[in-house]
Structures are given as C-alpha cells and as structure tokens.
Image: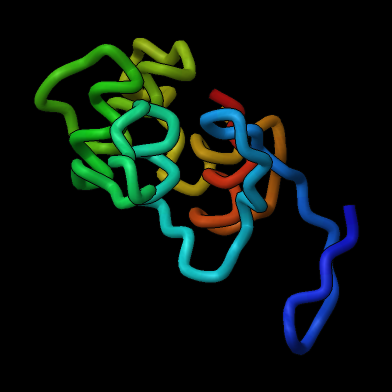
Length: 110
C-alpha cells in the first residue's frame, strides 16, 4: 500500500489491530507503542500502559530481562553469546533487515 504522508510517499504495511486496520508506520508510533501493541497492553485510547521493556517481557513470556534479552528470548536465542543487538533482533522478529528500531518493530506481526 502506498501512502502519502504530507511530504513524501512510502510503502507501508498495515496491521489489523482490534478489528481496525492501522497504519503501523504512522508518525509518532514508537518502539514503546509497538511493544505494547504486541503485548496487548494498549489501553482503550491506544496509549501504551507499560514501558517498552515491560511490554517486551510480557510479550516474550519473560520477567525482569532487559528489552534486548526479552526480545532475543522471544526470537529463540538462548545463548547470550548469540544475542543480537536491539535493532538486529527487531529486524529478525520482523523478517526484515536494515530497518531502524521503530520501523522494524512496526513490521512485527502479533
């Protein structure tokens, strides 16, 4: 889907969230927002209720890990020497490469 956003156009996947098609890549959608989207912890007004680390731990089924640890665990990496850095693990989970943190997290499907 090609979307025009004020100054430029870009190809943007959509996400079906709570029965509504949402442009995942809308301006203002942060890593925190996407981690809460994946964890199912956005409130009724689509406002995150947890910080990114807490939401990542909830989504990954872990507790007390740093966001990188939680996401690597979700990705199936159990050996810390094989952990990817934040941008890398987000791209891995999204099935993409080269995107920044917000963009990669917007492409992860719940």
